[in-house]
Image (cartoon, rainbow over all chains, first blue to last red; front, side):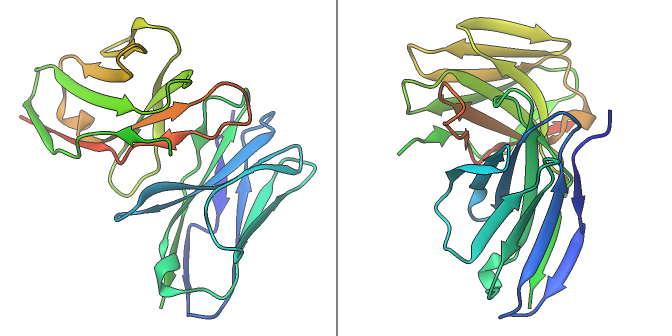
Length: 111
Length: 112
């Protein structure tokens, strides 16, 4: 069974731009969560989607948004990028809303 | 605020030794506990999940949970240099509406 896939793997943007990241969960998993990981803050929860509905949201500004499609694929968007948004963005999928399986991540660099 | 505490390390052990990684959590209603391994530059990989007090063994890994003390640990027997990584502890409440809280991780170095 294929794992969680994320695209793109690497991204370089400049301040003020926006970015969209994509995540395809493991087949059959309907829950998708997004995390931001930085050396200074560790793994920070962004939001969780289940069956196209956002069920939980972390403490991030409104510039961070996401959605989930009917095939469980999910996208997250960051608008008006800031230097501090440089991070590894991780997507995790779950079958039973418990164990999470992470994708390889998208490394975003904001210049 | 829910907190998960881990010693950042690094924890250095010789090859073949037992590595002991510890994690404490603040939320008493926590029901699910996970250990992830993260190699440098890679994403976290689920190693173990544990839900009941006591020990759970999987190969060289043993997770130990003590809900009364709000403490969960991971033992790695016969440590190998390939075990060198950061180990993240994650704690989750019951039901699907709770999100997991991750610790900052403990860096483990296994030297030959």
